[in-house]
Image (tube, rainbow, N blue to C red; front, side, top):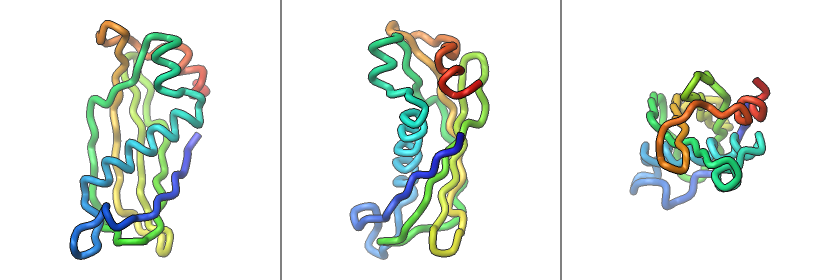
Length: 132
């Protein structure tokens, strides 16, 4: 399942010229990751307390393709890329609503850690929640 997260650019996300800092795109990715997990009933704190496992970001690859400006309406799309034995990837695309321009594409790799902060395989309940 793909989710779409609406984003309105606010002043503190921009530089003096009203352009969004590229570091903010990483924050948008994190917002979308949480929205994606929540849409699949995978709340990070609940999963941690109940199952003793947590997904953590291992890598982010970002292609900056354009820029957003103050008060523009954006949409961040997020979907599952791959679910391997010990990692999962999420794919992201940020677009400007007014003209559909793609501003950023990214792939985020997550690893899973247990309560001892050791890597573990992707838990079966994750696969079930993600419909795999």
